[in-house]
Image 1 (cartoon, helix red, strand yellow):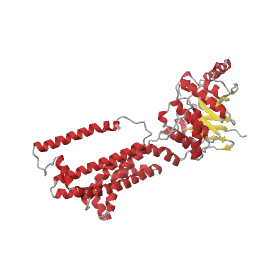
Image 2: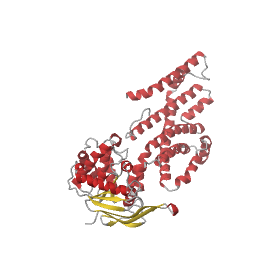
Image 3: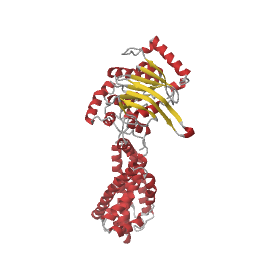
Image 4: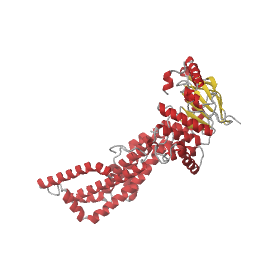
Length: 263
Length: 254
């Protein structure tokens, strides 16, 4: 079985001459089949750039990207994606938004419609099938955004600070919700986050990355068994890990309290 | 329905008041009808020549609608092409603006010289006056795409055409309609100019004829018809716009 994602020695710089800024310095990331991996690091540490490389919007200066075993460096259309803001087309209903995303991924419209009708009630959005996005709360929009990514027949899901724009309480609920949905479906996920708790709660593995040029400075296998309970945060081991990761990040002066709050 | 009445109420009341003042002034100063006829007399005159006036109105309406439709199609096509072909917008936009500086009253005789006296020069004139506001409005709409939505679509593998069809085009619709509303008014003025300068029917022709006979009341009747036509066309466009933008949260006073 090939890993869902392999990022091998990827470097990327922007600008030229004296203004050259190296954003990624030899990134190494692997997401195994059915694995949930989180990237955690400071703002401006090139996480967005990494996603753009994986999504094929930019080309790396060197290195290679493989998805599902295939070399896809610089190619678009191999990932499912959930951005920080829900990015729903305001003129399309919830169902039509899902249909659009799935049809870009090659799913026939009828099949996409059927799946979205089947899934919307499961994520607590029964009755919102023909609503327009602006009538939904931020949390509900993010659930649609996640569902859209989940249903897309792609080897890898990329979640870019998926709950970064939500208020604290909604964020907490959404983490629980995502945990239960993911554990029932086990897709390969690469998630970028600023929140240590979020990474510990959801991931199988956490990659800590440094400020630019970004490299992976530490890899942590999260030891908690699945299915994880929602009060995992009361586990003393959870807090030990949280402490350790926090110290790691602060000692590299890569994450401040502000960083954890802002996005 | 109640909402619509509330929006339509104040302007209708003001219009009614103005008509009253007009009629009152005509009575009070005993103005002769070849100088300034009152609204009552204009309506009476329009009623007596009703069938003939309707024929002219129909001719004008037909031409305006066909011309407007052709102009709208041209405008949208021009906007799409300028948007999609790299460099086209920068190269051609200034020329488009220049083309609008030629007065229609100068342009139409030229069109008649080139294209004869039939329907064609009239259509071309209306297309020329219509397409510009539509193309400009739609072009600005097309370039206003939300970068977050564009990034999202690109990330999941949408190409340029897909982004045009599913993001830029629907996003441009509200802009397009503001252009369509302006163009609708232009199209009717354009028809009137064309009919005035070279036609044997239509409201423009009717007004010109009435002027040469000093039938000022009929001139006013013609003007009233133009206003009515514009209002109807405007109303139809607003109704279509509401259907197309039903996804938008309704704003106050719109």
